[in-house]
Image 1 (cartoon, rainbow, N blue to C red):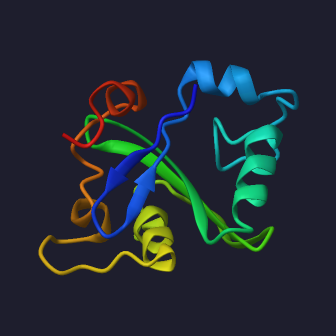
Image 2 (image 1 turned 60 degrees about the vertical axis):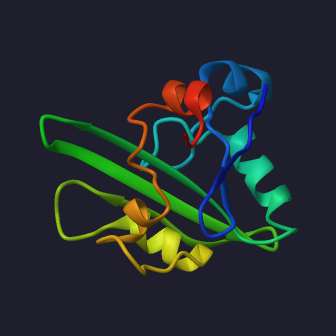
Length: 132
């Protein structure tokens, strides 16, 4: 079951839970090595939805300050950014994708914090709690 969560700046988030992934997946291959969960079925959904406007997919995995983040942005049925990955270097693919999606910084230190993506630290918590 998909759940849409409203975020600031007219943004939204659909957490890709294990259950949602299982519902979507008929093509389990992950064609982009930059992602763990972006399989062909999810890519098809992103490309389809992008006919309505820009849509992005982000992943992040950190533990003890070390980790990785990845992003991709689609529009009009095509990938327009990415796939990008960062392994603790100067790249910041999530903030770069958020900029492309239209997030602007007015109060916080970066786009990720500006729309509150740090509020929950797991996909499951986003699904359970939403933005609150």
